[in-house]
Image 1 (spheres, rainbow, N blue to C red):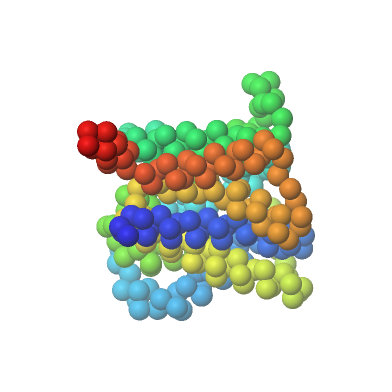
Image 2 (tube, rainbow, N blue to C red; image 1 turned 90 degrees about the vertical axis):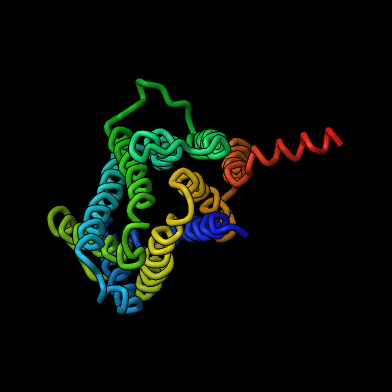
Length: 298
């Protein structure tokens, strides 16, 4: 098993965790305002990670701190634009537009990194993009139906694409774990400030909310972003974006398991296309065709 395949499998684990997080997030948001929730989630994740990786945090240098703060701001902007956008658009359109980053990453990568993605990754991204449309969109979208929420959500997609590319570029230049932990802390602090400005932040008192928050903080935030920052040392930004398109697929699976929610035929086809796209990206087309030619010649 190659290092890239191991990294991609680690990112798949992150995607599964994020898919499951929809259920837990839904429980918490019934009690807490959005930024209030994000503040507790990310600050808790940052504190727990800092204690667990205390040796890494004690050795943080200026470059890691500076880049960690920069990417933390970018990650916060992703959540901020997505949250604002959701106030004006539907959840299905938000999920689809956010997923556009799977196409934006291979477009931006050659411009920013001067590195052209492999053909298999591009084909996989296109399949996943079509699948995302079938899975997420419940109605036909036209130019006339585009609203300000869609614009905010598109900015969110652009920001997250840039975040994925930036992680891929910088994580090999710094210590990856402390780099990720700093980002979590920045998102938590900025979310807390935002919460005090536009919300009335509270401390949750419900036990089920705290259980959900702890799982989200440890598994879906701390572990997820640390794994991403480490894994992207060994895989491409395009692969990362493509694997993350599996999030709504796993969300649908957990929705069926816990709530009995069923996908439509269109949604099922979309989910299959997303998974096909992920598999396509892992295939070495050049070697595959070379083997086919050898078999034909023999």
